[in-house]
Amino acid sequence: RPRVLSGIQPTADSFHLGNFLGALRQWVDLQREHQPFFFIADQHAITVEHDPKLLRERTLRCVAQLLAAGVDPARSAVFVQSHVPEHSQLSWVLQCLTGFGEARRMTQFKDKSAKGGEGAASVGLFTYPILQAADILLYRPHYVPVGEDQRQHLELTRDLAQRFNHRFKKTFRLPEPYILKATAKIGDLQEPTAKMSKSASSPSGIVEMLDPPAASAKKIRSAVTDSDTEIRYDPETKPGVSNLLTIHSALTGTAIGDLEEQYAGRGYGDLKKELADIVVDLVTPFRDRTLELLDDQQHLTDVLAQGAEQARAVAQATLADVYRRVGFVAAA
Ligand code: TYM
Image (cartoon, rainbow, N blue to C red; front, side, top):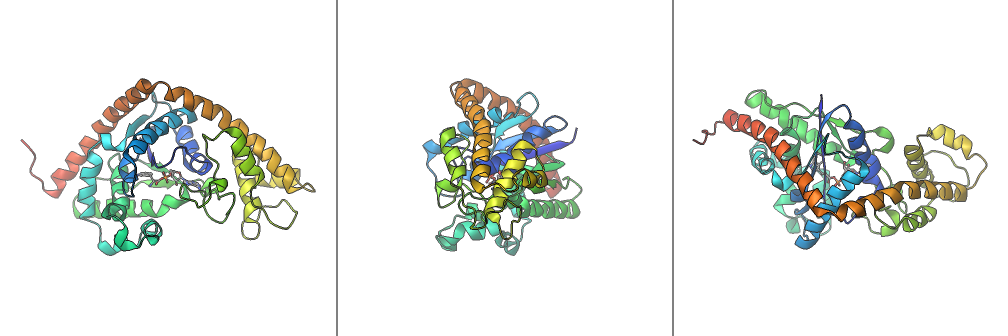
């Protein structure tokens, strides 16, 4: 079975609808016919200032949410990045193959360091994409299901894999990004041209999967639209309405064209109200199940222990190849 790998950062109390539609749903779907490795990127989460207690809590909340979304530990290895030291070990080797200028071109570093200035950003934030390349290449996956914002990191990953294979010997598989066009970039409800994001300026634009459902319904009903009245998909001139149609279509499986017909002659209020109900139907059981899972932390840590064991078996074998190929003498 083809391998799949992906990760998520434990940097928020809750996944948001962008994470769910852009990535998680695909993780769950791909489980059936692939061999998946899904992990919580706790090492990536310390590239910016963080609170240790929160990080610990959020890491477990991530596991619970993955399981609540339908990730099945019997099919997928679910683990925490820091439990598999090979990620950092391979990252070092890849750092030595990455050009300084090449790393500097990563737009996420530019965006994230923009606020405090480059001088205030950590070196870890700078090398973040190289750790991500290591995360991926260790498992030799065929596909990496992510949202559009990860595309550049996937390109770097492929470049590094190719470079290593060329300079040493064929070791890594070139992974394909698995990015579904329809849900690759879910917009913020208040600022629909920007992606829905944990670091958004206002919480009212983000549908948090673990918020009380009524709060999410309210956010949908207050979503920014435009001064026109027509319900039509046109991201250029009607980003707000188009984003709502995208979310509706993704959750109901109705084609956008059919939705346009269905809502012809009706007002934005109708669309928002119906979408609010659809979102409530999604988040209510998700939230209940997550809270239930969080009551049994032993189960969560058992899942992680089993996942780390499966992951390490693969990661150790890849790292051993890499060490041999770069000329490290084997430890006796
Ligand atoms: P993270 O934690 O920011 O996001 C997790 C996943 O959610 C997707 N996503 C979105 N998709 C559509 N619309 C949005 N508004 C939206 N917001 C987020 C992201 O694209 C991602 O797939 N660097 C990664 C974590 C990571 C990783 C990896 C991923 C570390 N190592 C190896 C894949 C492979 C990140 O910060 O994702």
